[in-house]
Image (cartoon, rainbow, N blue to C red; front, side, top):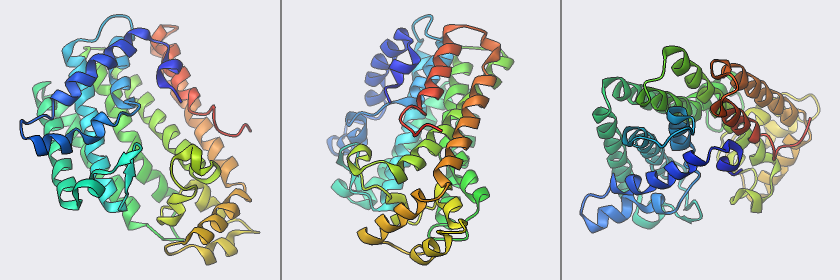
Length: 325
């Protein structure tokens, strides 16, 4: 998905180009080694969805972003990058964004410390933007941590519940998307009604994003994903399609016999095909569609403004490469 093609707000695209310079500059300390580590994933690129949501929420694409608008986006992207540094250590990942992961190149200890540094820089920028934004990012970090703990606590558990799943993705994914929209609304001085609407849109967008990702992990090819299909299954992260499949009358017992521990390539593919054979994908698609509708509904304060149309298209665009119902 190309987010700028969906959003269709050219000014936001220009602003994100300006943000790239600020993003790199925000973590450069003057130590050659540390600077290479902290900018490693920045220079690897990325969709920059969180800064995009922040800047779009601030300006609506109607005027250039202020420096505070851009710095709000930088703070959010740094928090996101810090979480990736830490996640890759926990997952023992070797590749991120088509380059070596930081832990693979520099080792786990450096990756953890560098992630902490990125988090500290995020907090420092947020503090400069005011106590409300600083408090919001602190709260968001707590949500991220709770989401991660929820996921780790239930890893390889065939008794994981849908409530466990939703708690994890709301913390790990949706909380930061929601905060992105709210930070943009705050730096722009939007009304309380608009702030709340954008905050809820971001939450819904994050839920759609993760539900989509979890569907693709099961149905997409290795080439489309850039990683082996069913990787979450192999790592013991049992997502909504899998949880539904575990309770399927025909395939559930066989799937339960396969899952519960690490999988080799053969068992991973077997488990993936069992999930596809159930209605787990369809039910997850329904859940994502429900969040798309909720995302559209909360944008009513913006009438038919370009921002409303752009955000609506952005949320709907997440569904384009998924199977039709």
